[in-house]
Length: 266
Image (cartoon, rainbow, N blue to C red; front, side, top):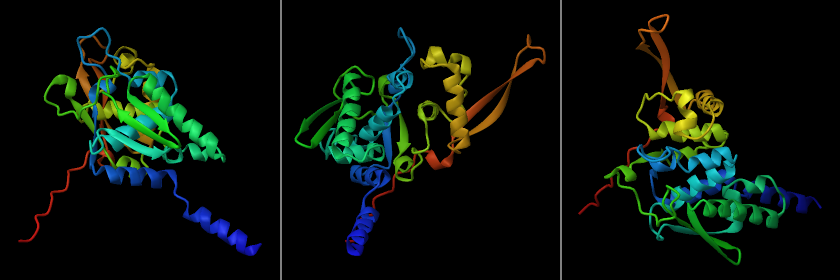
């Protein structure tokens, strides 16, 4: 009995965690930073709406789906396998921390598949199953269902933000709730020291001012953004000026410079 208990303890200690799995997947993608088209967060000016696909995750309270999508972009965007990746459904479940909420393998597999189906319904990925394997293929980030290609930033529709792979491998993503993760993407979309007025949140992004504010406060509490005050001249204001806040990502989650390849000795 003691031998059995010791073996079970050893097996539990050896079992990979969600972060271990995310790290292994991202190390396989060989990317320092993950590109994501800005139109996922907010549509370009001039259209009928400024809302991007991110809105549906926030209003639908789909944190798991949003985390899954960002990880898929990270795993597939190197293009090695034609913008696709194939994993066992239990690996998908562990990568998405679904195994933390159930002790049954089949429930974990089902939970992972349902999360991916929600992304397919939003035309952000295509996916199919073969036995226990699930293959996921990226589609364009704007939700049009068009085939994916890596953004180069040459034209407006191809402008992109970057998320360092260390965001996942060091666990920076783990304590973020849905408002926090959404606002992390919003801040990452803009230049350093940009303003994100609460009253513009419904028009610009499609969620409430309260969600907007809670997300920014979460980022501040986790030391993922810095904030500074800025005073703007306002002749009709009682004080003659108004105070606003500007934000930028902290160094821990800024894009990393790619390491230069070392030339082989002759």
